[in-house]
Length: 330
Image (cartoon, rainbow, N blue to C red; front, side, top):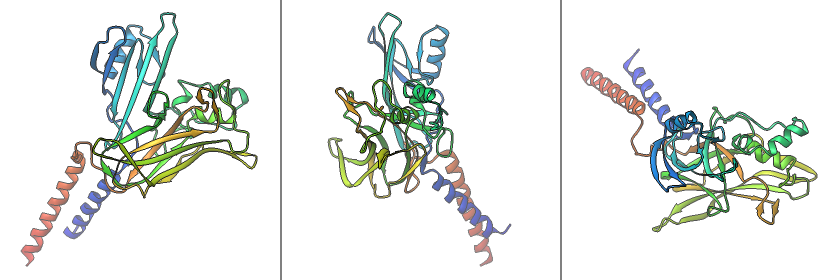
């Protein structure tokens, strides 16, 4: 192999390495994250490793809620900065679990979680199967309608709690960023409620029924308020009933975010036509995957990954060797 060929290959490998790092695939990279545990009885606070804590709780016979390790009663914990495939995107999850002393556990959460739940929406399901999915909190709640993620098993699920938050969910960035695109879809729980309804929700079968996701890019002012620009906002129809037909998003939809430049994060709003006396009846859930930055996004610390450093050093070494070869010829 000539030195020119070696240098070209190293350059291409380095370029590919940096280019690939701009996609957030939401693959967890930390299998045992640290979380803060709040004891509701004693107000004690402790920081623990989640996996170890759940193992101990399971051995002690503590009741656990959901399939994924977010909640353990009678405690509540907040998981901040859930690790993703690209640490420039920062997920936060808030979870609360209460024991009423009669065997009944109320559980609720809002924000984000990483899921690999493969329980996609199937329009050919029987009426009973669709009904079960419409009541499927704790199971179909965390499942993306297409099944798995866009290009891998993992994806991110969000619940927008309009009662305990400002009415939207936020995806923060470690540094101001230019974006390229994102993929969005319904959860199986939301899809089932839209298709067949349940005791609380109504199926979309009237002209104008709709479920809409709005994504807004924001910058932060001096007091850390979210500042919006009309050019950095996009609406995504998750479900629409028009001309006598229901169009339900049950695949990954690519959304262009190329107009979102220099943003400190994204805010996600949901809006439904199915609203009752106590607020929205459609479950306020959606899923995202493959958030893509316009250029390679830095890690949270601003330092390239070790593998990237290795490739960079290799590339520099190749340049040095090639430069020396060229100078000797001269």
